[in-house]
Amino acid sequence: MAKSGDFTFELSEKDYQALQKILTGISNVDQRKAILGALKQGAKAIARVGKKNLKSKNKKKTGNLLGSINTKAVRKIVSAYAGFKRTGVKKGNHAHLVDRGTAKRWTKKGAYRGSVSKASPYTGTKFWTIAVQSEGPNAMRRVTDVIYDELTKITSRRK
Image (cartoon, rainbow, N blue to C red; front, side, top):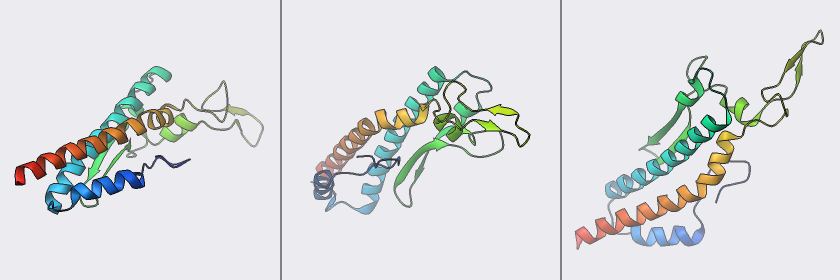
């Protein structure tokens, strides 16, 4: 389940216990490889839906935001991330503004400077939020299925 207001997914106690039952007796190297592969697939699925939402909801100006959507897997702590490259001035640094929107803004002299979402301030396009909320549970389900499949393959080879 996803925590409210957060983009982190956690296994339920039942799923965790079933996974631990399979993981016992398998070496750490095999576990990490299977789990990391499954996490990569889940992160890529969320990134793919995020790109699709961005293309459908936003007008393409430069494509920097679309090009900055990236996935990353960290082997050392066995985790995978889907998000935006935040390198340089014109890459994914503005993703949160487009996704969540901004307030109406005025200068000190009173000139109106608008908001990111002109029609309705405080609400952005929610392209990334919707992608995580809609694809997150499906990705989590796929991740656990892939982990189970990989680990059953590993255990069947060892017998």
